[in-house]
Length: 277
Image 1 (cartoon, rainbow, N blue to C red):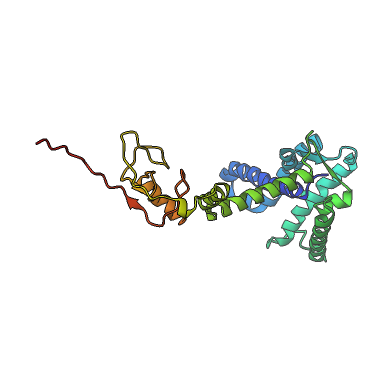
Image 2 (cartoon, helix red, strand yellow):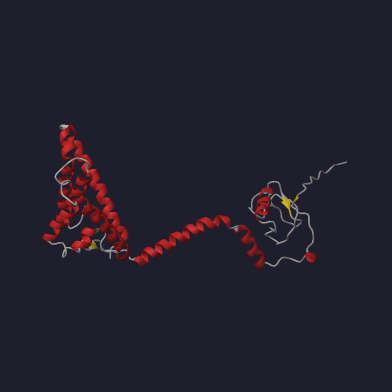
């Protein structure tokens, strides 16, 4: 079964293709006398739409919009009689409606109760559209009257389960893109680390003054410390490393010994100078 969206998109494509084709053709007639376009524009549109319908539906069993979307009328339903009626109801009905809405006088306007017939057809098209939304079978009143169903010409049909799964996945990914920036995953990571590693008891901790050596590295970035600081333990941190971690998590502790200290203390570098007597 062809999805409703595809059936509606095919009609939108048919309208766009028809407008482009008619617009390009009318440019050819712009150098002819103006009375030709003023008096025969609707008739020219009628001939052009008839040619488009003939070379699409009659030859390929599908309009140009349907061919672009990979659908067509079922060949066993589209008989020669239905082809003639299809062209008469689609192209001819549009021509008569245009003539009725045209302010110029013509023989069609002289037909009694023609406006009432056009209004009834519009109401029928609206009711047919409501039925189409419920059943998803005949998007136009002509197709319902002629019982012209459509089928897909592609070998691989996209099922509703696949489309539903794709919609759910896209909705879930958009939800993640919106919520992930709101989650402080660094703080969550530190909390999990605290659960996995038992912090030493305060009574067992001995305060130490860290010593700087040529091979000393920051316990966070594992590089040479820049503006070294410590947490009263023997490990050294870059000022920017420990400050950024504390901005993310106020209870950030030493990743080496898991000691927590509220204050970040700079390392005092003492240069020992040997004075010879």
